[in-house]
Length: 170
Image (cartoon, rainbow, N blue to C red):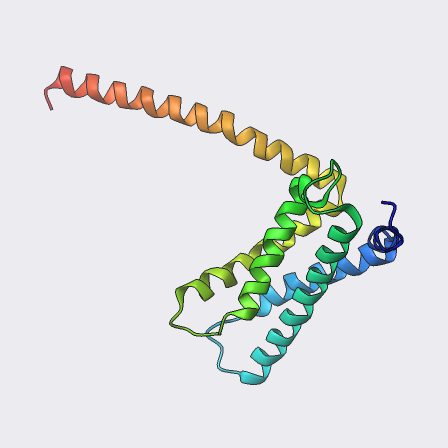
């Protein structure tokens, strides 16, 4: 980046202390997921969880905005959304913002669906550690061959089933 604000944003967002703080907020988000109980009637506890959710969402939004300022959004080669892990972070952050903006109504199914997307927040940890990225990428690349093998087994069992029905007469 050649703009002084972009240089400052790049320096700030790549600082080790900021990355550690983001990891701490991700851990807080995981704890919030573990202690959240939608069926709970304790209003004080739910208010504390909701306040912490707002804090987590604001921190993640600031991180996304600073990264977009530092690296660009989509257009350049090293821009923010060109990295697939950043795209996942962006999607999770957008869903979190939508979750905050929509009214908390038990009758709206979309609110419940959006709240379930909070379970994707721990995926943000993967971006921080190279070894986790390698493991997850390997697992994702292994899904296609596993699906192909499973489909081949299905076809074999299907053919054997048809043959057995034809031979044994039902």
